[in-house]
Length: 322
View 1 (cartoon, rainbow, N blue to C red):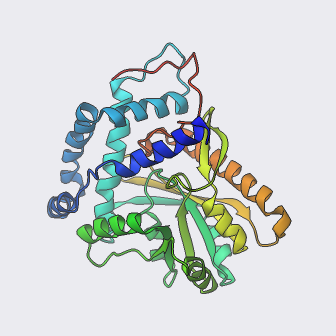
View 2 (view 1 turned 45 degrees about the horizontal axis):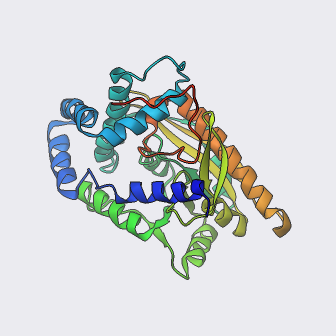
């Protein structure tokens, strides 16, 4: 096993082993405070959360600096200052805070603009279902607003069981009735379950920017450096011969969100011999779409771990110490 792959797996293990900062208890407290005071008044606490990360989370600071230097395309002599870091953490805290209201169906509090909704409308019109691949970018919860506009639209997430348990515990702390429809990976019947959902016309969501270390990955250019993206989500779509859409719910400040849908890949007619290349092409396009939306909303990227661990350090990009 080469050094890059060992570093890749070690990095993936690192983010999984990091303690959950948003415990169920704290989420319940935040929910009570937020729903009691209202969104505007309770946002005051976000400044304290951002300041906490800035002062006491050196790993998050370091990863934020590495990402912001790339996405903002800062010159080699420029440092990523505290203002940029604070804004990044504040955006993260805002998205988590808004989750309280989105999961309690308070869509009236938000100005949500949907771009290219016809793509998802057309994809599910035939009743064959579609894969929706997102990322740790902005808010995935704003997708609930789309479901509200289309009564009967079923949205399920595919993820590993441990992640599913944590997410449903967090959602249950915010709203006991807002449990997510989740298909756990790693079971013999996981693929059959996903296939059944698609046949029922469901939208099956996946996150394409993290793996669990054992997944096969494909190296592509992402924000100017090589990064490895997992192949699993796209291999599943290829095996099940379904179209794939990209989705990003970008936080634009205040109460504004932009939900973007983009055509990513269509495996409906890909023959088995062409599947590998089609999957690689899909990962490459996914990385390009993700990079474009990161540049559009640079403080929306919430992957606070070493995403470019396989990329060699460049002489013009020295590590900055907190």
